[in-house]
Length: 194
Length: 183
Image 1 (cartoon, rainbow over the protein chains, first blue to last red):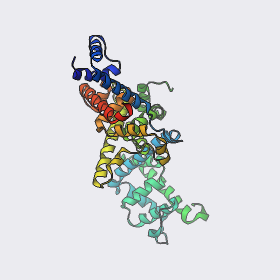
Image 2 (cartoon, chains in turn yellow, purple):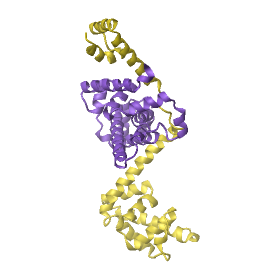
Image 3 (cartoon, rainbow over the protein chains, first blue to last red):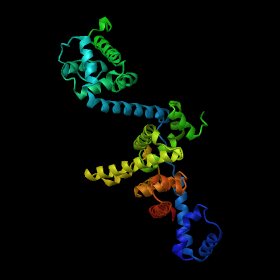
Image 4 (cartoon, one colour):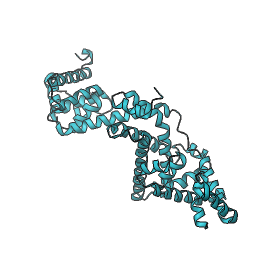
């Protein structure tokens, strides 16, 4: 056996996967070749060192929150997918909901809505109210609707708008009513969203 | 319930039992995270890659065939994501003329943790990170995950012969890179 042939067998030898005649021929070669013996030792030590070094452990608390984080990412993807489907159909769904919202609320807010910051959910509700009066086809409206106002269940119910059914009007009205209550709660907190 | 086979968990999930997915995550989270960590050598990136793998698995469950094994499917998602991640990172570094050495990453986000790791551990991390991506994947799957050549071939989309050859080259590169620690 030549050195090049022997060295190609080193890994199988280290993993215990050589047997029979091939193993005997390799052993014979190693007995006679100090350079191959040295290289095999070097390989065995390398593999031992690679096994010895453990990866750095994950930070404390990481595993406790792992599943929650996976679930959060799945929910975020679902919302994002829903929004991306909704955007091209604004006229058919989101704008319809906003229209119902406007009909039910029948008012406009007094302050300059564009000065509203995005720091709280309530402020976002105010922003939606403003957008509903003017730029109903803005993508921002959809994002606010999806991310700030609606729960996953509400989003799921809105998804049914893509398969119009007898319950469509009822669903739109229900969601619009919830939006109206949120609007009232923000601008007239004393009335408690009456 | 924890002893359900992978295939049973997949069937339960396909039937709408979300708890089955939680069990899959609990069963494989550590293996996927440490696989990703070996590939990218960065905690944040490994966490993201492994979690995204579960998200992709959840979304792509309908494409999963029961004649495949769940873990090779999950491993393939992680390996492909990690390779793409590293390629993007290299491209980003190249475009921004950053120090290419930073690509070897840090084993954790904390400088204290980095200091704790000794010189040998850093040399091993660096040597593995400097392997070509597919070669690195093959080495990690074989050496640390103890997968067969056939399973690895299925995961990385190469022949068994090509996998064996890549593993051989990877080990020899590591031997040379770590020579001063082992000679």
